[in-house]
Length: 80
Image 1 (cartoon, one colour):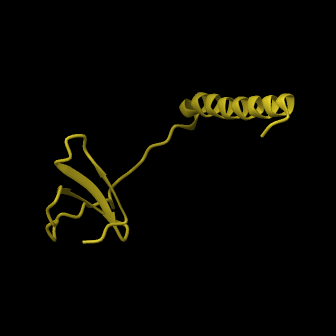
Image 2 (cartoon, rainbow, N blue to C red):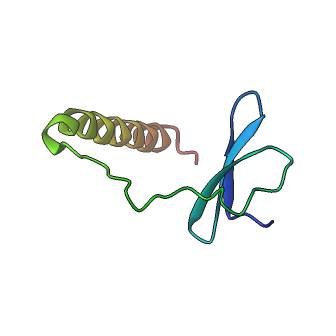
């Protein structure tokens, strides 16, 4: 069965894969059963922007800091 993507566990006994937007878990090396598809219609993700703001800010700061450092070093050394 072709898959759009997959992720295996560390022991590689089971893997999660997607095919045409549907997800399933199967034992590695075996063809998944017809009823093995996961029901994701009830899946909910709760987001708390106020709690995530510190991480978003820190990550944006880190990316800009690193990019700026590369630009400054390039300008000083004259190499790319």
